[in-house]
Length: 357
Image (cartoon, rainbow, N blue to C red; front, side, top):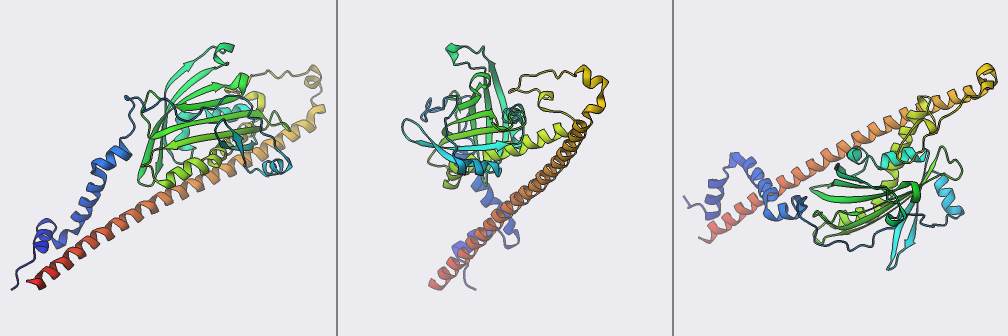
């Protein structure tokens, strides 16, 4: 009987034929446990260590972006779609998205500032939590800054999660804006990032609608995969305005369905007002019968819209879950194929070695 090859002896000693699963487990353990993977992808961010610099990307300034919307842009917005354009900076241009939202500005601001709930609303966000909030007294000396909000965020892609720390600057009352940069006292997985929201009442319906402007610029490290860079620099623009529109309209539909209105909801971007009932309408309620009927009809439509939006969200959540499951199945299958390929290669090399003896 021929002596077994070195490769076969080694393989059978380490992984018997009836224990191929152990090969797969070992391959996965090596892949996820490697120092290179941990240092680059899993543990690059550090809450207790400062970032490598204090800013490479030019930060946004609060206030009106002064974007002119022509007839084509207005038609796009009227159809409920985002309009993309460019704004100029000192060195280059930045992408900017304009979006109309069927909800008042205070509702929209509440969605944007609900950072602790971003994982349930924002695409690719797996975790988000504020770790510090600093209130300010707005004045000319601080450009009417109202508040600083520091948020720890984590975005997830297949086989990769990136953590970063954001410092938000709130200027709602004076500039109708929110800007942000990285918190450079923490080490982030992004090389640099800055962004901007500008939120105003819609010119055609100031009480019931909002027009928002959004822009972001992200600089990534060289080790970050290209598909992540492409997503953060392009698709993230329209995704950001899409989720704000969606969840603002869901919330507003709930408010209207419950009999509320623009002045019944208080938020960051609102100044509450008290509705006064006239003596005439109190003693002659039949005069306002038509108005009440219209309000009831609007409430019923809003309730139906809210229910439809919630059903759509449930459907999309199920689709996202299926995509995640399918993605992991794909990785498992690829890993199994690689392990079996390694095994076949060892048998082939072993056979070649036997024939040479």
